[in-house]
Image (cartoon, rainbow, N blue to C red; front, top):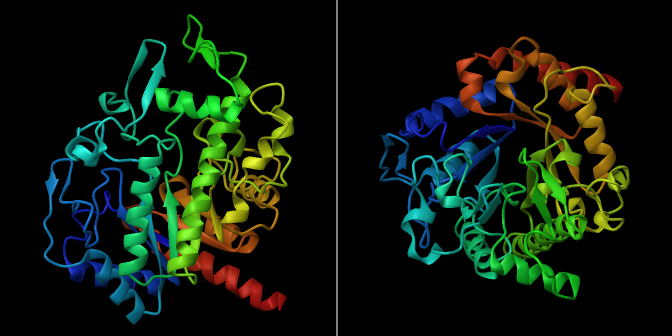
Length: 390
């Protein structure tokens, strides 16, 4: 799979000829599947939507298309026998750096972005330019319905092969601490709490978190919110296009993303037991959502390629992902293209030989680092080995 990021390629794919040219390069390189990002951080879109505004501005750049970006990719991909996964960012709704996007322009979203709890106090994530995006609060039912509406629209208007959930999570440990999240957490506990957010955690003089009495339950609650929402997306896909594979990208370092509600493991995984003295409850495994997916795309965006015993290697990350998913869905290794320019053939080969596929992020990095031949050699090497084994 080769990923076509909406923002990074915003100007490059301003013409249909450019799309055709790079799809030809994609096929020549050996890929049989692409990912087309149509709802980036801005919360505006690159498809014909009745509910969301079109993406016409990214930073200083403006592009206005009088043609359907997604349909062009779908039509041209079919001509080349390429499968297409459509990707949308789920809860982001604006660039905090530029104050651009749906969270800043759509009155419907007023008051629905995350409330941060920082060492300096609480503030709306929309007003924090250090954050990657203005996230909608995943806890709010109206935000979940909002996402389900655009997922429904995509699945109704277009025919494609996969639907990838990107940023289907909380932003980080600082969000969300709104009254709505407190109420939902108290419902989850079955009783009220005296001090919020202090009963979750406080900050020391250095800005580090200090656990409160409900620290561990808080992380399980948030992961449960994400699992339950993915179940709703799963039901929507199965109802509208049951042949579409539900896919999810997340970082491979599972133990470190609990603050985002991202337990991509199988519910049978016991990885959390190593963290019972730190952040995990004994029942944290119940929030695992690999069983709801068709494909988990594990983000092995790591420093090294080889090293089965090295947590900073792709080889280690792939092995850990396979262990924690435990066969509940297919696993694809994914690569951040510019990380391993000198070893990219090995990285591609490793993903294809150890997992069910490879995803390369992103085409702009492939272009800028001229990785086409390296990728082809890696694909050819893996395919040759697989034929020999048969």
